[in-house]
Image: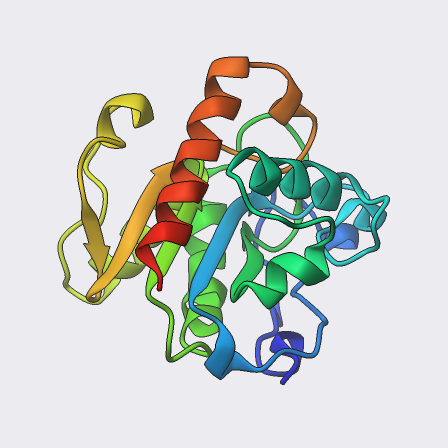
Length: 202
């Protein structure tokens, strides 16, 4: 299965994103083997930096480092996939600024919801940053369900357990891109959250 064969944005309604960097994963994957979905903020402005663009891609490099920090014996995105971890973004186009308009997150949450439905055996979601937390909460509220993650600082929220439709949800920080190298404390917490998710899923 290729996720981008099932999910498409047809009208591109968002005003604050880069349409030219629109991306939904174009990889062949067995959905039954995915047990963890890691969701980061937005597609990179340069498609060559995406998760599946090759070993030199920025998102691939920082994500491999994050999993290595967590104790996973991986050296590539392919090896992360082999662990049963699927990587995607909450917003399918690149950002034009630092922040993303809440309306854009809501628009793209519909695509994310369709994408998550492709994986029937998921046991955990890694929510890498505030944009992702907002997107998942939006999906839940649209279905009349309670918020998945309450409001508050991520470093405080991490101590609690949260669930989305019976599956564990881990709030964390963004691991994709240059911000990964800036704050050592966040990098440590990312490693802890990835390790917790890998341990949670047998």
